[in-house]
Length: 367
Image 1 (cartoon, rainbow, N blue to C red):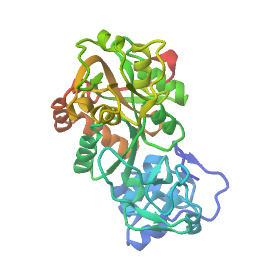
Image 2: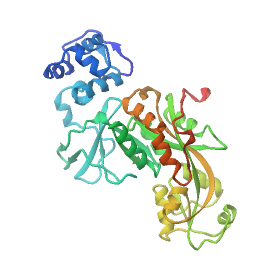
Image 3: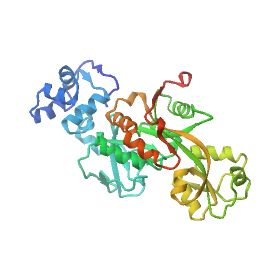
Image 4: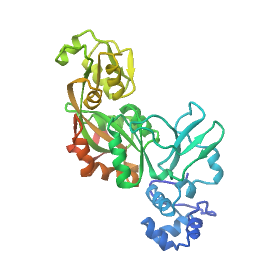
């Protein structure tokens, strides 16, 4: 891979392997034409074409967008490289559908899975042997986010409407989201470890798990509480905790699991485990459990009584190195927009007054 974050001069140039010049000539564009459309200098275009200059990730994305192709098509080596696809994780059931997205200049295939925005159109199909791409959507136009926010559909819709990019939100706990970010498989990770008693929780978790300079984009403060079944008569948090109830929990490492362990110190781990906030609420609504910890939004959507426990800060984390990516810059603009903040303000338990605040954390000593 020849993409680097900072442009550098390559030594011992050889015959150019990138296809920038060929694509430019096909369109009958001059170097000046391409430079203007990509927002870079003509000298940079010339140097990139003969591989005297390695483009930054942002420059590569801009050139690819201007030429209407993918970064991999321009800089990814021979066309035969497609025969060894990069799966984000092992494929389970075959055949399978997949999405394509470029993260840090590398194109990944993501097996299609359920999301909090319903069914998202797939980009291709894998029959166990052959990969077939079924649309012309370029990987550089998709942003992949790992988050447990049940309201992420509002962000995805506003993001596409305002920017033309696509957002794929993978349902993951805060810890799982940071793990994917650390492995370079997602652009952004949603986390909610920070509370009124520990405002640095998100920054600490992000730097601990990635070891990289991190940017945190605040989205909202949201209320977490206890969702209760109709048979539960207790009117207080302490009363519920002292009652002999069937609980539904979350997986180890999730922020909700940490909160539940704090609330019930020494209590056995619930036998029933839910995948996300809506899963907790659904387990209680269906009578499989009598109590569980989830966002007020998820509990009230399920028609449950919710006892508020605390407010948490929900941030989107991404590496400082990738912050200049046009898709992340577009995400920042959308989170700061009046239209998106208004939508969040109308949700139960969401307070978006902090939406759009951006802060950077180099390491724990600099928080």
